[in-house]
Length: 466
Ligand SMILES: NC(=O)c1ccc[n+]([C@@H]2O[C@H](COP(=O)([O-])OP(=O)(O)OC[C@H]3O[C@@H](n4cnc5c(N)ncnc54)[C@H](O)[C@@H]3O)[C@@H](O)[C@H]2O)c1
Image (cartoon, rainbow, N blue to C red; front, side):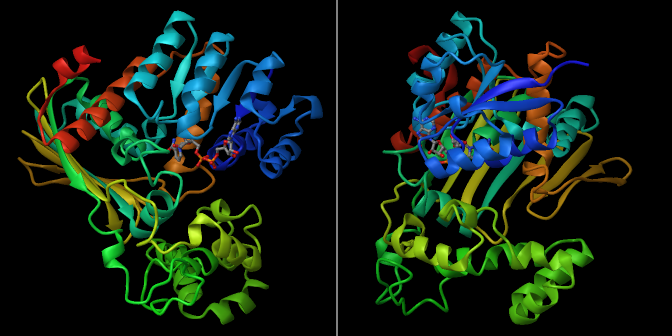
């Protein structure tokens, strides 16, 4: 039997610890994290303890880790966007293969430099386009390529970011401002653009995009709202973005569970929403209720390293970024954007991204000459339907929903890690090369340029210019 693949982690934050670390703990026979770098001592030590990382292989920074010349099969780079460029290039030059979180980098120049470095040094570089590894999106790909839809004519794909995810990540959080993060169309939608490119197997010819930051602005603040929700906001009962509602009371998570198409989950969600005291009392004897009464996962675990305690959450909201009024943050990224693409094969596609959805999830329809494919990949449900033009027959498929925490992203996180391990073992070639991943990033950068310049982009010229 082959030995587990040995990995070194850069960045033991949400993705490093919860997505890839979680996979390693569940599959110790396949993969082990033997070294970790993170300047945050709490995160580093927590990760090191869970993965039994030897003290001499725990580092404060990725620079320290590279200096130590640790012998591992690959690096998993889950640092924040703006650190990808320097850390990825240094590690690739040092000879490490790498699983790199998306987006590759916040600027096109940095993105190209990373890809060129991987190619020059003949390193395997896999970008975390996790949706390619879900059963749901793999099925879409298979249906499109099977010819079942006839000739594909148009794709309409929407990334419906929930209002609380938008507020958490793109108004209060890490991806709120292009001074510190990538534009939202890259940060949030490089996955979706990658899917379009994958299904079409073709390059885009023309691209245009419009969008703006329409809502999360000071002029929309309720009268008398202070800078922080915790400073006695008069709108605390009427504002969906009131931070204790989102993080302490976990209301959006409970609502999402109450919308489940599974009767037990629906019941649990409704009970937790409408009778929190009773739910707390019953949780002592009915363990499934504890998934909500003891909820300590995303986004609560981003706010504090002690998400189990309401007091720690409230302290973080009083002092940290996530307690800020959504109308008074230093955010500048869009809250809605539409991208129109004409592929060289003549197919047209529209990607709509917005941050005002009641639930988290993607919806799509692909219309072909013989059938229409409709689908929803959302927090609590995932399904596809093929509607045949000739017979009127409908074929339905059901999948793991996005919320499936054990798998993450509807199975995409674990599917990607499983694939990466197979690639490192030489059992399969990467499903997608770094150069393939570049296509989605090029579309995202072109979309941002189009939005800002109010211009249509000829993709071949855009590529030549860069
Ligand atoms: N694939 C996906 O679907 C997906 C989803 C969410 C986020 N992401 C991406 O994953 C990446 C990480 O996001 P996250 O939410 O886990 O962020 P995070 O902030 O939770 O984690 C990043 C970690 O990097 C650490 N760090 C900072 N400086 C460092 C250094 N010099 N050396 C080593 N570590 C350092 C930080 O302390 C932090 O713990 C980002 O690029 C993000 O865009 C991808």
